[in-house]
Each structure stands twice: as C-alpha cells, then as structure tokens.
Image 1 (cartoon, helix red, strand yellow):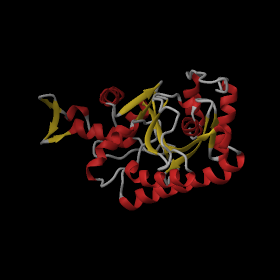
Image 2 (tube, helix red, strand yellow):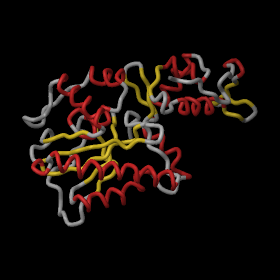
Image 3 (cartoon, one colour):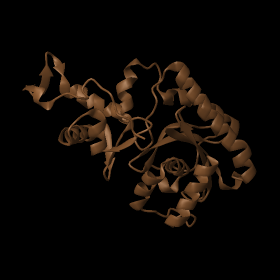
Image 4 (cartoon, one colour):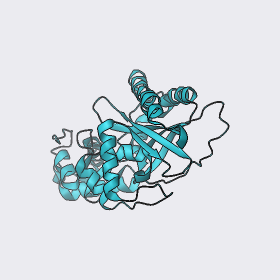
Length: 287
C-alpha cells in the first residue's frame, strides 16, 4: 500500500513561486528542482508504479503540476509510462553513480564469471526495457570459444527465461496490464504463443522461484533463470544460464543450475550491501 511521501516541497503553494529565467526560486532555492526530485523519490519498492493522481498525492502537488513533472522526466528518460501507470527507468541509477565505487553490475561480473566457469556455460544478468530483455552482464566460460547462439537484441520478455521470471514477479494487476497488449511472437515451433499457456508458465515460475525456457528462442538451447531481489523483496534483475537443450534435464536444472544461480544472486546482494553500490530499480523501470 502506498504511504504518503514526505518532502520539503510536500505542501508548497504554487502561488509562492516566482519565475526568473525559467526557474522558480525562493531566495536561491529552486523549488521546481526540489519538486522534480520529490517525484523521483516517491517511487519506492512498495509503490513502484503510480498513476499521475497518486504521484500528485504522494508529493503534495496538483495534478497539473504532477503532469508537467512526469512529462519532463519521461522526455529525459528517467520515467516511462504504460497506460495510466508511471514508473522509473534505471537511468535514475546514474544519478547515484557519482558517489558509488562500483555499480551492482560491476560487482556481479566476477560472481557470474565463477558460475559460468563452474557450470561451463554462459551466464547472464538482465533487466527489461519497454517489455524487451536487456543484458547487463554476460559471463562466458574461459574454455568455451564462443556461444553459437547470437546475442539477439530486443527479444520480448514473453519468450525468454529472464523476461518470464521478471514478469512472474509482477503483481497480478500489473501483469494483466502488460499481457493485455503483449504480442506473442513465434521464434521456433516450440515458442509459446497461447496466452493461457503463457500465464500457466508464469504462475509456475512465480510459485517455484525459477523459470525454464527450452528451445523457444533457438531450438538448440535452453535457459533457466532466477530472480535477483533485494532485502525488501523488490526485483532488481534476473540471472540466467544458457545451455544446450539436451543438457537441460530436470536433475541438472533443479539440482545444479538453479542452486548456483540462487547463490550468485545472494552473493551479488551481499557484495552490493558491503560495498555500498547503488541498487538497480525494478525491471519495469528499465535501463
């Protein structure tokens, strides 16, 4: 449930603002900048997506003022919208990068390198950008020359292990909103293109905490993914290992791949907390 957001501008009166050279100032204090930051701060793990009215209420703004700030943040790439809901993109993370020694992805790289070496398979970390999967970290086994599958750009979340794992983590209302306009594209004869079957698989992924995609993007390969979440349960990203379809037996997936990915997720979070790295926003606040 969304709680009221307290800020220095929460109860500022629009009538107190004076405009000079396009900036509203009060004795050198730029009120519009403070209000814009309060809009960004209003998005938190317990309210990752909000309507314009909710943003206005959380920040003590009129709807017209909230609309202008959201439009500006959308134009700059810090906020995006789907339907009536607004959410942060992970470009916001750049604002915090100045005082962080390492990003969460830099911390993740050596951890995923170890998993890739242990499994002798490529390992990825990914988020979502407007419903498409974006790779943030790619770890390749040292003795594997090159993965034959191309690093395809812009794959829809509905067809990939990472994307489905992230979708499965959404609240029901947000998942319904996403799937309402989703176009299920077939990449191979095995790709799920039936929305009812897709929902069944997403529910299974949500229930078991991992997701297997076999031969749906490339018939030769299978992928298994687990979520990377913070201590509050907010989803940061998903981790996946890519293997041949033949290797993706129930025993290997459940007894080997999933435990190693889960340990990697825990290690990344521990490294982030120890090193003070900035956290990546929710996958539906994409990079």
